[in-house]
Amino acid sequence: MILWVVVLALTLLAPVRLAGQDSLRTQEPQDTLPVQEPEDTVLVQEPEDTVFVPVGPPKPEIYVAELSVFDGRHYLGPLQKVTDGTSSYDSQPTFTPDGQSLLYTAEYGYGERVQTEIHRYYLSSRRDTRITRTGESEYSPTPVLGDRAFSAIRVEADSTRRLWRFTMQGMDGEALFRNLDAVAHHAWGNESTVLLYVLGDPATVRIADLTTGQTEVVAQGVGRSLNKIPNRNAWSFVEKLSPNQAWISEINIGTREIRRIIPTVLGGQSHAWTPEGVLLMTRGSQIYQWDSEVDEDWRLVADLGNRFVTVSGIAVSPDGSKIAFVADPIPDVEP
Image (cartoon, rainbow, N blue to C red; front, side):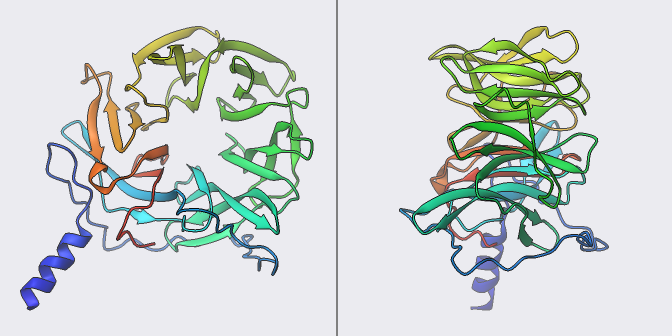
C-alpha cells in the first residue's frame, strides 16, 4: 500500500512529457528564498458588487512552468496554475522585467456589465493583486522598456481602443497616440518606439514614435502576435500571405526594413523568443521551437494533446527560466 501511494504521488508530480524525449526534471535550489513584494504594493479589498463572471463552461487559465534546455532542446517542468478559469476570462500573461511576477488580463462583472482589468501575480509568494481599477476595460499589459511603468490597451466608453501608460501600481493613466483609436496589441522596441497592431480591413502593423507623435504603416494583412527580438534592433510579427501561408517576419526598428525569417507552424499564431534568440510558437496543444543555429525547421518541444488543451498566449521570462501560457483547463494542476 505504501509503495502504491509513493508511485501515485510521483506520477502526479511528474513534469510534462515532451514528445519523443524523456522529460528533464529541474530541482529548485535549496537556498532559493521567496521574493519580497514591493512595499508600495497594496492588496485592495474588492467592492461587494464586484465578482468574477461565472458564465458558460470553464474558461482558459494561465499556467507557468520552469523552462530548461538540454542538448539544444527546450523542456517544460511541472505546471503551476496561476488563475482560476472556472469563472472568468484570464489571458495575455507577460513577465515583469525582473521575471518575478506576471501581468495579465482578468475579466470582471458588475451586474450586467462586463469589463477587463490588469492583475499582477507574484510567482514566489503566489499572491495576486488587481492593479487597475477603472470604469473602462484594459487589456494586453506590457512593461514599458526603461521605465517603471506598463502600457495597456484601453477600450474607452465609445468603444475606441487606445494605447495607455500606467505606473506599476496602476496609477496616473495617460493616453498615448490619441489619433489612433483602433489599437489592439503592441510591443515596445525601446523607450520611445512601439510597434502597434491596428484593427482594420486589412489590419496593419504601425511603428509609433513617442518623441514625435508620428506613426507609420509598415505592413498589412498581419497577425496579432508582436514581439521584440532579444539582442536585436528588431521586432517580429506574423505576416499573412494567404489563408494557408504565413511567415514570422522581422522589422528593423531603425531602417524599417522587413525580412522574412521562417514560415509559421501551420495554423500557429502566438510566438515568443527566449533570451538566446530561440523562437517558440504554439499550434493547438503543441509548442514548437526554432533555433537558427541548429534547426532547419520547427522542432516539437511539448505536446499537451493527451490533456485535451489548446495552448495560446505564450510568454518567456527575461532570463529564460520560465514560460507562461494560456490554455484550456488542465485537470489535476494545482494553483
